[in-house]
Image 1 (tube, rainbow, N blue to C red):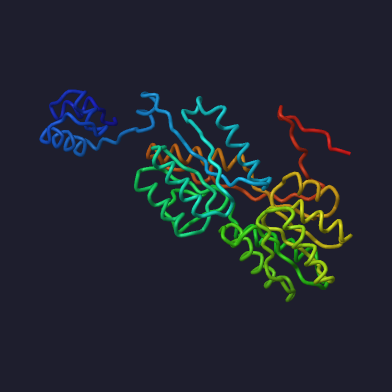
Image 2 (cartoon, one colour):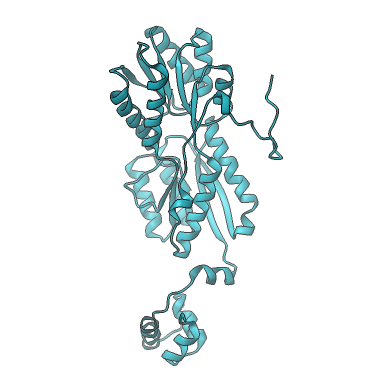
Length: 354
């Protein structure tokens, strides 16, 4: 039978109130008495059920999600999932807040993390920018006893507790495999459209894509990266210029956002022959698939990532283990023929637009 607080009190010869003060680190206990209680805890092998204790106390976990602002449809979908989770947060003993920062802005992200630390939150989830000041801010959060999860884009070398997102290196290799299979022996270079090389998910996708193309692409040239900052108009201009400079272009791998601009540029140039692999099912990529401009989309489940982040942050705050299999985010592949219908506000599939 597991030892209880009653066993500790009896072993140390103190009251239950004194045991409670020691377990919760509260003042009002003499050093000699505290030492006696701690010795009893060690001798009995007592392991505290922190989650049960917090449930009994009605503890609420204040959590902060730091998400890039702007036009990126996937980030807006991610934010919608966070706000949906916030509507049921009272049932899960969480209080969830959303903080916006400019995309790819490391100093702004570090400042937002420090602000959350100052508020004394229980956990922070953020889309990471790979920069020393962000890693240092994550370290300050962990030093303050605050659990930290990176979302979508990781910062593995930091002190973060967990990453909620897909294996982006594998995602890039998957995109490369699809590109090589779709193009076959067709000649022509392949272009890459990214948001920014300041985020690790984009760099890892590019690394995986280039590696697979080198292995299976038959020596096909992969052009220098076009950084569109996830802005549709900038992406449209960059892709349009690339199509003019490389009329033989065979494929485009869009590993970030800005896909509305990509689709517009291809349609304006009449280049439906270009093989396009993109990421995330959003309105622009959905339309691109339906119109035959995009050939395949690799997708990650934003809702799963948000739910996973909440579970991990609560588990870390309670000192409980994370169930790795439950938190693994899969990569889904969609083409026009298996494209899921969008859902309306009631969760019902909407009819496809004419």
